[in-house]
Image (cartoon, rainbow, N blue to C red; front, top):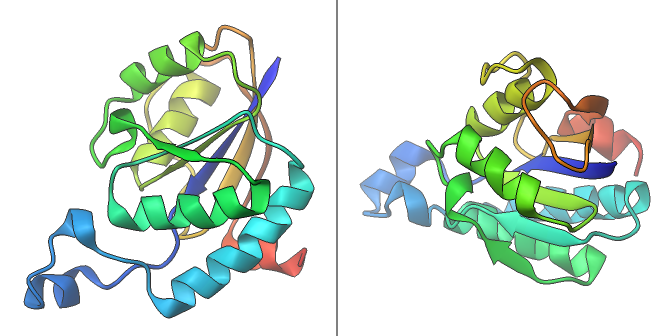
Length: 166
């Protein structure tokens, strides 16, 4: 059995504001509030999971910045993962998880993609039935060879709940 932590990126520059400034969606940065909140969340998550085997993130700037904050708390290096970009294929990500021997694995990504992955792992269908808020997280227990419908939800918390553990 291994653990998988799903984390949604922190608060980023508003999409419309970014567009007005000529910033693409992929290059939207975290806001100051987003950075500060993720730093506090990272400390809470580090207490929940004292170490990580691998930290993967979407190539988008906001997820790379969120992952960098988490990596600092865990003293590890984040790695970009194309399957975590917005609109990524949850089946492809599941195949990557099956071939990954690291434990625990942390994935930093986007909505609704993380929720669809959660649905696939828990219920066998890539359906978004739980919504991760910005900075929210969910911890799953996986079989060594994860497959649809085989995961067990350990916990899921929104940012306010996580910060309440601070």
